[in-house]
Every structure is written in structure tokens, then in C-alpha cells.
Length: 307
Image (tube, rainbow, N blue to C red; front, top):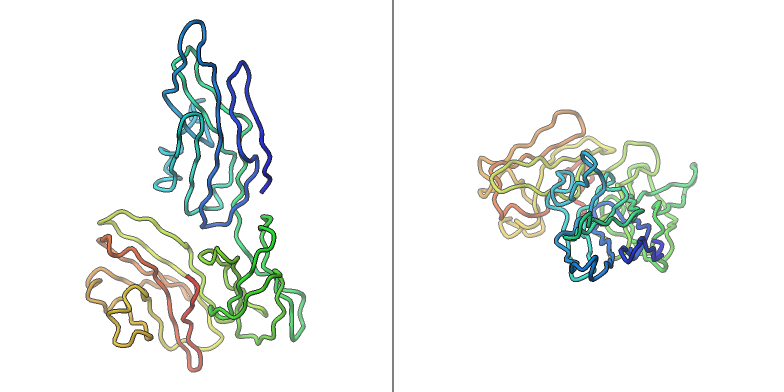
């Protein structure tokens, strides 16, 4: 992130952005801030601000307020006080990468002012990169196109289970062809990289299509993942850790489709091999939770500690 102050303005109107470029991890939350100024009087008329908006695009030459943009539904919030305003975007998506501009509207004739150019946001995912094989101990690198904060610590996961914390983004590991690896930045464990097979494409892993989903009460939602295993899968199901108080053993997850709270409301769809979709209908507020996919083979169980 480049912390450069930029001022756009003329005739005592202006916008100052705290940063011109921001890079953030997919799924995380970002705040974009600015201050603005305007003359207290123009031609004997007091200046009053009666509107503030953030936008990325125009419709008929008019800026589209992010609060009304369907692409950002339930994900944006403005926090504005006198002459300052912060835009907060949650559950960042790669499609949120754009230039964000701030506009304030006054009661003066032609009294709209836009801070242009605005703030460029780039949204990126963490990725595990593998050094050239063959090697019995390849280097894995936790990579992001964003510059991550200095002195970051990195958390490594093998087959979904936490194994190591490292100061360096590079990790040397002994492996076999069944293993997958993920990484996360400490403090941002909710946004890990997708699991990567070290050798080939058939290893033990589960990749969720969406890391966060917002849905309306009474509606339906599809929660999907792709999965693979080095061995034949014997059983598989979805579960929610928040329902552990219902399980016969707190350490043994149970199939959500057999939970009385979800009776008649849960379907598991497999439209193609290696893809599973949990569909929950007639949503209630108590359905807000984490949902995990689990499978077992003759000698392995994917039961990830990844969120």
C-alpha cells in the first residue's frame, strides 16, 4: 500500500485521499478515506453540504452511488463526519478492483465536486507457488501480487491442518504426492490461499467456491466446493462446527442433512464429479454459521481446520 496524500481541488474546493493505491486480500475488509474542503460562502450564499457519495462508475453521466449498486449489496458502509468520509467494503471480491472516487454535493449552483483521480483498489488472492520438481524437499512460497506488510508471519497448512508458522514467506517441506498445502498471513487466517497439490493435480484437497455468502432470511443459498482425493472416497458430507453441541461426540462431526434443525431444508447436489453443493432453503437467522465439507477414504480423512 502506497501512503501518498493527493489533493484534488480548485477555488477552495478539494478532496484529499489518504492513499492513492490500496491492495487488499480477497474476502477481507478495506477502508478508503478522504477529507474534503469547500468555501464557506459563495456570492453571499452560505455553503451547505447535502450529499456525499462514493462511486466507481457512471450511468447516463451520473455517478452510481455504491450504496445502490447491486454489485455491492450489503457490503458497503459510509462513515462520514464534517469534511471527512470513509468507505468500508466487506467481503472483497476480485471484481471490486477499480478506481473509487468521492463526490460531495452542496446547495450552491453547480455545487458538485468530485475528487478525481480517485483511489485505485486492487483485490488479490494468496497463492502457493512450488519450486521446480523433481525434488524431495521443494520450496513453497506464499505469494501475493500485493506487497504484504513487513514482518508478516505466515501460517502453513498441510491437507487442511495447521503445521507451521514462518517469518519468511518461503517454506521447505518434505511431502508425498497425496499432500496439498495452503498458506495464510497471520492476523488474516480467515483468508487462506486455495490448497495446492505439490505434485500433479490429484491430491487431498477441498476448495470452496465462495468464502463468504450473504443471503436474505427466507431465501435459499447454495454453498459449493470442489474436492479431490488420492484414494477412493468412501463417505462424504457437509457439517457445521456451530452444531457440535448436537453431535454424539464433540470431536466427531455429523451430517447436516440428519440434523433436526435442517429437516426438510437441506439438499446435497453433485452435478459433476468432484463438485458438491449444499443447498439450504427457507433460511433462518440461526443458519448463520460456517459450513465445512468432509470426506473419508480407507486411510485419510479431510476435516480441515481451514475456515
